Amino acid sequence: MTAIDVTGARTTEAADVITGARERIDALDDRIIGLIQERVAVSAVIQEARIASGGRRVNLSREMDVLGHYREALGKPGTALAMTLLELCRGKMSTTRL
Ligand SMILES: O=C(O)C(=O)C[C@]1(C(=O)O)C=C[C@@H](O)C=C1
Image 1 (cartoon, rainbow, N blue to C red):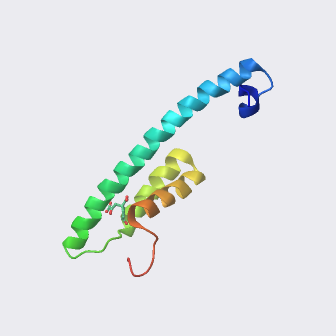
Image 2: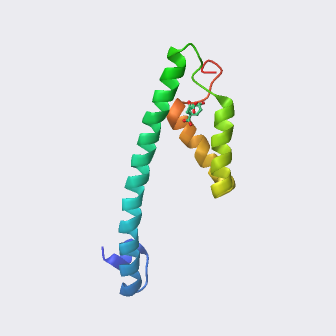
């Protein structure tokens, strides 16, 4: 497969631009994944401290703040992104976790 095939571009110039930009995207995605893993670990520290103190895993008012933060920054899709992040951090929401 040529660079043109792989990128969908119609010229070698466009294929070069796309190939370079995809490398940057892959590097950004690696950093984003690392930050998400760090967020999961920090969130676990909070949840474990709360549960050890006799509290509940989930804190809904804080989750509303997190959702609002992402919505303000990224619009409606930000809310969906924040919900996915929260699910990664505290597991799927269920009444037994509340
Ligand atoms: O901030 C907290 O109290 C947390 O437990 C962290 C966190 C989060 O990942 O942002 C996770 C679970 C809670 O329901 C709310 C928020």
